[in-house]
Image 1 (cartoon, rainbow, N blue to C red):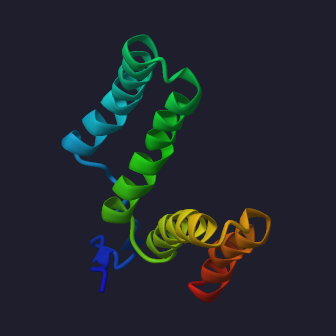
Image 2 (cartoon, rainbow, N blue to C red):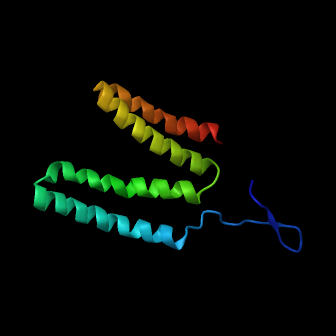
Image 3 (cartoon, one colour):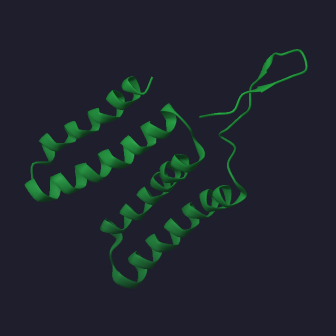
Length: 117
């Protein structure tokens, strides 16, 4: 439940609840640097240039995970749906090998956005 704030005239004041902490902003800033370093490490020392690009998926993944803790309401549920959809896609794709069918799990995201409205 969110707290409502009013000024001296009884008018409701909008309070931005999506303010990110200092640590959250620093994690967001350092994630691309770590992903780039990991990519070059995998490529230069292990010759894994092709599969190494996957480390760059950490950048949006970290942002979505951080948004779960900094957002409220609909945005929070949509962020959780994104994480769930990606996880379900990977697990179901690996287990079944039917990647071309499993992409349908991403329809969970707009459904959650509509239901959370």
